[in-house]
Amino acid sequence: MIDEFIYSGWHIAGCARSLEIIKTLRDEYGHDHDFQSVDVSNESEVADWSKKIIQRYGAPDLLINNASVYDQHRPVR
Image 1 (cartoon, rainbow, N blue to C red):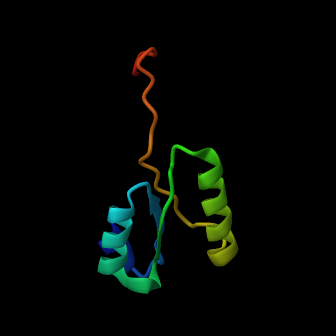
Image 2 (tube, one colour; image 1 turned 120 degrees about the horizontal axis):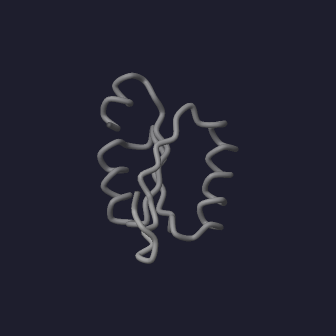
């Protein structure tokens, strides 16, 4: 999806827990886009990252979130 968004002229800001994945994204897409390592299971890290992104670029036009939490004790619907 990133390729298509970039091709369409979008600026991409993204995060992931894995520093290795972030390095790969930075290498592939360069400095025109913003990829940072953030522990998405840590609410305060996500909040800090979000504030920095909004201060730097303004509110996002689109947010795609594929992070989730699975609770074994609750049914999946």
